[in-house]
Image 1 (cartoon, helix red, strand yellow):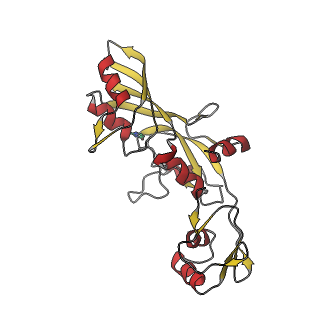
Image 2 (tube, protein in one colour):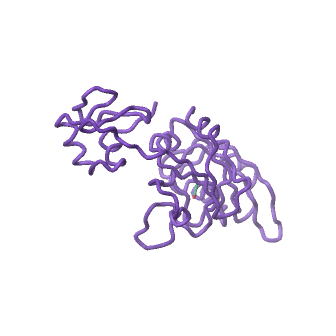
Image 3 (cartoon, rainbow, N blue to C red):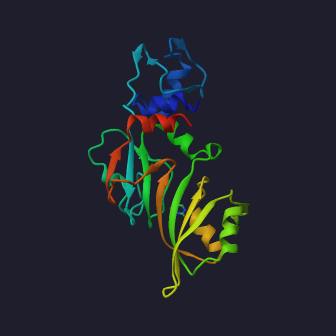
Length: 238
Ligand code: URA
């Protein structure tokens, strides 16, 4: 089961800074499920009971939000260039949520927001092979051979991509563009754009339509909803 370092969990719960939390641990002030823990780096799970100086740690209620990110928004908590971030869509959410993974500034689509670090780690860890489906409008009309290349894997940043599922949805012979669906389970930087660059059909527009079994159904750009309990359970079960 995925887990997080005790000092990180303490810092996130607002006990003290991470450094100070480390001192509290080594000084013997912290117990996990009734047992004193003095070793730094000890991992704890969401359901572990932590006490600091005998006081139970109040962990934030875990929240899981499914957001339809618009184009022109940064998917991080802060931006040094002061551009609009995804956080501006959640002014009333009290918990310290953050995006699970990233979507480019000019990419729209499904983005999970949570304060559950364990789930976020799991969903972004390559070993879980979590599938994401994108719809890309690309320059030119890819041939079957080129689509086959994407399916097999192309070399980007010195590493071949894992097999992908692809299909051409439509083509516009006048404008010389195509709309293509691609499903990948890796999450490398600008991966989809780089894959299409590699076959010489640069992406004009990109949208993430599916995140595993989750879709954007019922949401408009800029809207979000809480995940249902069964959806969270399904994600956690992976
Ligand atoms: N691939 C990209 O190139 N950009 C994204 O935003 C997501 C996947």
